[in-house]
Length: 148
Image (cartoon, rainbow, N blue to C red; front, side, top):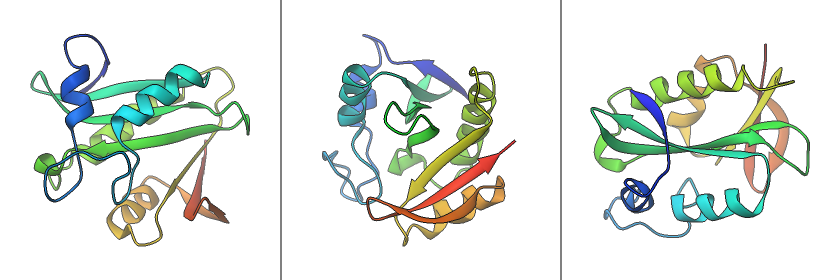
């Protein structure tokens, strides 16, 4: 597995990835904003890095992370694995790759993320990496922090 740049060869596949059970990508999915919305957000807001999650030369997921220009905090803003590839440990591998890259960013000593309170699988996964609840809610999502 590796994180790859979004480019002319993989952008459409990346945009069409979905976590929706019906297999149809939407602007707002159950637990995450669409990859298309995230890519556009990264163009108009500085500090965000967008990457495809690739396995065996096939994009199976998407990540957006970096420095939030409003809060000046480092965030894993988006992470998704396509519904057809979930349950195979790819999310765990992707998080480790993202954390490894973020640790190299200038001044990144703390990382935030948030998820819907009923996203029990993600919460368990994040906590296994040492993320802890901050006690804050962020736009209806439970906020987590990881310090290193």
